[in-house]
Image (cartoon, rainbow, N blue to C red; front, side):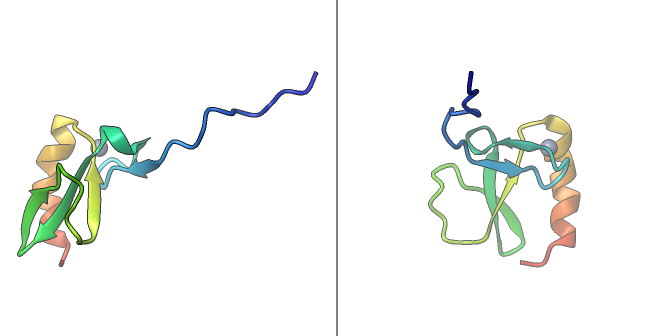
Length: 72
Ligand SMILES: [Zn+2]
């Protein structure tokens, strides 16, 4: 019997910039870096390079350090 390979539709995934885990896009927090500040883009409408972070407290804490390494 043919086994139809996962036909659940394509769920977009992104990796958290800190832990690199692949997570469903919906469950990640999107943010952009604007004038060296982290701006969470809740409405997903900022026309800037977006980054994603999971909502893990540790990751969010590390995000501040991570930001200082990234030049927008
Ligand atoms: Zn993470």
